[in-house]
Image (cartoon, rainbow, N blue to C red; front, side, top):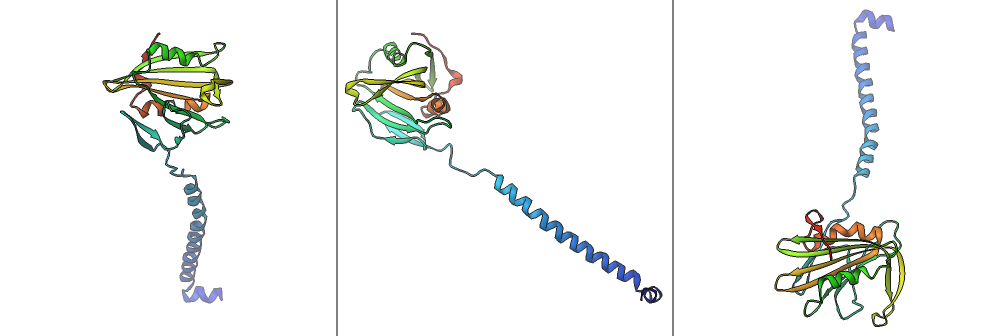
Length: 216
């Protein structure tokens, strides 16, 4: 048979046809192998979970852009304008809390309020950093305090506390020109508060980059 193909001149044509068939099979096989790889890359693409989205909140004359993950909660005191639960950072067992206050008459001397916040932490092992900044034309002050927080328990009128080690507070005083003074207090486990420090400043237009040290 092989000799007949050679003599008849059909052998080259048969070999060429066989080569085309082999190439076609190879291409199909390659496509089948490449498909799973593309699926893997698609699976590695991070999903859009809505992180970074904010909601505008108006509290009297104060407007805040708060992350959607900060959930509104009932106020435990009539003195509060608002209360928000802050999601716990990875490894923290407790959530954080943001409270917002505004008092008729301004709420007292700035230094006295900053000192009061500092006094809510045990003096042993306590760290304190005070900053002054501007959000547009609005002046604000930040007290960054860490250590053992005297965490309130029970009805506020009783003023009972329990020590909470490894806590941090970011206390902010915002002076709105001609519209009063507002107090923001973010407190919780250290990692949780640190993770939300930038979001807190962004909520009222502040930035750590332009802040300067402040002393009382």
